[in-house]
Image (cartoon, rainbow, N blue to C red; front, side, top):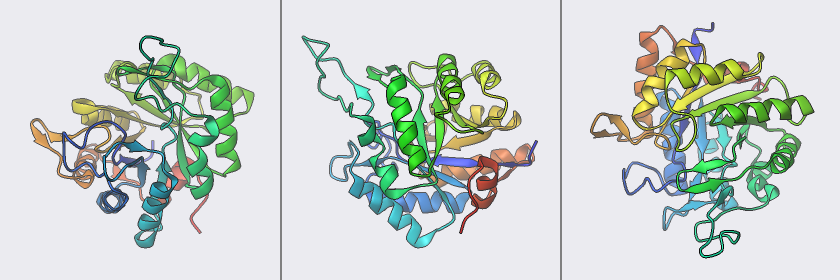
Length: 294
């Protein structure tokens, strides 16, 4: 087992969290600044969504992604950028006809969901192997759409981080790997506690880890109050970890996190108690099977 652990910081997400914690970054400038602070605190990877700077609503605007990436790269060329492709997967059944998309639906074609990846070519982007009830809406990622997105991601020279929220999704990921749509060794992110996927418990993490391919590189996270308990279990099992205001708004019970950097600092402190150090970006590249920088 390596003595280093890769910390990913998920900066802002796509839920209605800025009204619950004003530290959640919204504008491209704020997201980029938060990324730089998280990297300085010990995050080797920053996971990026973007928002409409006026409304804080989730956005797929390429210009916002470009601004975030350029602002980060102006000051830090080492931290690994991980862009989401989860945006564009939401379907809300309409009323009275549930076959018609209702308000809040963002569902778009695979090529639209990966457009920013092809344009900006980060080192990593997410690929959600998930069709599920996601809170009160549907998150749709059909096998055909996943094959198309995987091809577009591969054509861009980007490594997909395969996000799985339940056991059955790991089986679909294994099938896509066997078909050759996802390269080996695969990079997995085990996502726990999201309604209505697997719970954020040690038992769920152990079960999901056991079904990953033998050569899988993996990370895990829990949301809300389970963020740090799952971090400790995942790191103890030899996995990598994720924290950030996308997943959890609190630094401790009743205390809002003042920044993404504060959550990363707490992660670094917890890892130190089990004799693990945060991986540098270059160490993370080696662990994740990415090309060396430069």
